[in-house]
Length: 545
Image (cartoon, rainbow, N blue to C red):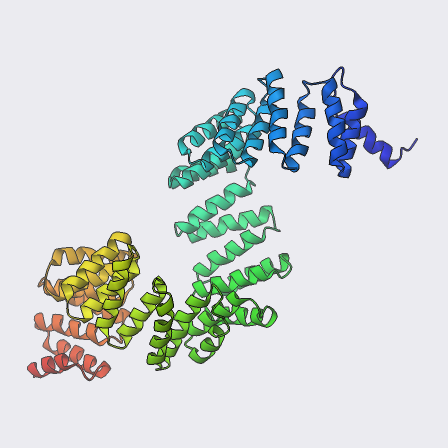
């Protein structure tokens, strides 16, 4: 005989109830039915009636506490759990549920210790997972690591503890061991997406883009609906300059997400980061047509236009952003840059000065105004602005130190310039521009040449194909009277930056020192072709005649 769907549901529910001898089944069933229908007060009454008959029932206590917790009656829920633990102090399920309850109540340390206790009592994977997560949140990395190792021992056939171990090791910046743990998780389950994604992120961060690409493709093979993995794959492809392939991947991600505007926004950002401002402009223009009230879209449209030197259009986009918007200060800075590029420097400086009159401590606008003052040749005003800012704030912004270093250099105070470049490097030791600037400054003045060489070699490790840094190295060699090495290095520099007159003049000096008069003459002539006003090159050329 066929049963009605209601009878089947009721029979299934009854079969699942962990009833014990002495538990009245009717109120228990009524409680579950009321709970499923959303009648929580009725469910609570029924479960309490069932609990009165069977006070040691873990399942009933958990249901009562769950209902009380959903109504934010945390203290009452806790009392139910504690009463159960007095009856059954070793029950790991009660301990685990109490830990979850304490977490919701914001009592993280107690929750972490209880979850750890539950894991050790019952060896439950859920308890281990909660304990590790809570310990991490509490900043107890060593305890989290210990618990994750115990989890891996108890549940040797599960990828989850190895993933947890890998995650902890990533936070400790122990990336090699993290790789090993994620690898162990994947040996157990080659489709473990969390481990695949974590490994892909490590490889991407390390610059191993082909490995990252392969891992993100595996994530997508496991779950074709993983839009975020598709997006990250596109990002990795962009970093490899595989632009068309990346755009296809982004398109597929968008289709999967049903044209999610958030994905379009992220795509535009990535195109900007990949130095594809034209493509970014197309994305943000389309979004501005549909989401004209989204100020971030207008701001980034302006940024993409500015990167293409479309200054008038960029101004129009930035002017869409009102003063009350959080994007306004950044838009203001870029408006000023656009105005300065349109030879409206005085207007640009006035715009930023008016803002600073009311917002004295705006760090970015102070920096931008100092940059515009540098462009205008008013180096002293730039120094006074930033020195005044430093007197009011204990900032460690390396860009402020770098900018002051440049300004002092242009004021012919190379010692103060070097001091600020060193301060910039204390904050950001791997900045190739500051390393190069400091090294070249020393070389130009013939001091600390060994130290200068070290700075510039470090800069070249970071930017090996930079013609200007290569020129600095050649100039250090020249100052050290290592003329053959200087000439060889400066030949490479002019290949990398063939339109820079200073590099050609440096090459001429090195060739002249080697007695290669004709080649030196050609180098000086090239300098004058590129910059006819270079009197030093003209004088050197006349001396060779």
